[in-house]
Every structure is written in structure tokens, then in C-alpha cells.
Length: 214
Image (cartoon, rainbow, N blue to C red):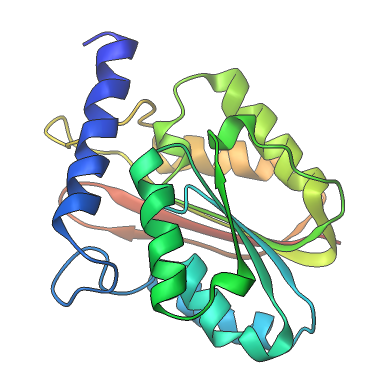
């Protein structure tokens, strides 16, 4: 499969997923935020006027959970996705759950997103990097993320590694967990790594990486 076909398959998979399931629908993949993201939300709840960037936000699985939990602290969540349907659903879901004032939807590829330096208190990218085909684009995105986080604040990356040949949709990049870890530690070399863990199952290893900017 060439790169164009791969991207088409990936888009179709997520388009079908977001068409088939409602956000937070019980029993679906979108039922709840990633457990690790949920564990970090209380930190954001304690910071007034927090600015969060969710790259690869989809219909709002994480963005809405963050905005809803931290609404009283005037949190702003910029949610970026390149699928038109995802952004459309994100807007609809923001209104449905009453958090549209806290959500800023952006229709853009994550790797093309402008990230203002020293602006965000938390940048998260959940199951995103493995779908960026160009090594240069991945590294440049991580460089911009590194520059975009304010001092003493955080980045969270969650990604699948060591995926089986039967994984669908096929990732653009299928690193070992060590290759992924090495890339992240290189990008955030001067940061304090708070959590780096690998959850193993029969199909892949899920790498969770949380670091604080010193």
C-alpha cells in the first residue's frame, strides 16, 4: 500500500468510527477518555486560566472531558483535527455538553498546526504520532510542542508501538517502544520525565509519556 492509499484508509476508518458511535457512548471506543488523561485532569483543575492543546482531538473525547472538569477555572482547550467530520462532531458535542465557550476547534493537520511559544500549560497527543508518515514532520511537530509549553508545565504523549501486521488502520509509523521512547526523550531532553510506561497486550505496546518542562 502506498502512502496515499494508507492515508485514505486511515481517514475512512476514523470517519466511519465517528459516524457509527456517539461521543461517550457506552461500550464504544469513545466511551471515556484515556485513563492516563483522566488522571491528569485534576492537575489542570487547580490552575486558573489554563490553556490546553489537544492534537488529534477527534470528536472531543479528551477535549470535552478536560473543558467540562475544569470549566470553573476558565480553562481554554484548543482541539485540532484534520478530519472535517471530527471537527463538525466536536462543535456539536461542545454545544451538547455545554462547554462550547471553553473549546476552540481547529481544522488542521497536527503537523501543520501553529503552536505559540511558551503558551500552553498542557499539550496532549493521544494516538497521533504513529499516523504521521514523515519522520521530519514528526520531529518538527515535537520541536514545536516542546517550544509551545510554558515553564513548569506538561506534555502527554500516548501512542501504540510494536503493532501487529494485522492492525487496522495500518499506522504510518510502527516503531518499537524503545524507538518511540528514544524519539520522545530526544525531543524533550531537558525536561523531567514524570511517567514513562509501557502497557503490553497481544497486538501492541502502548507507550505513555508524561514530562514536565524544567
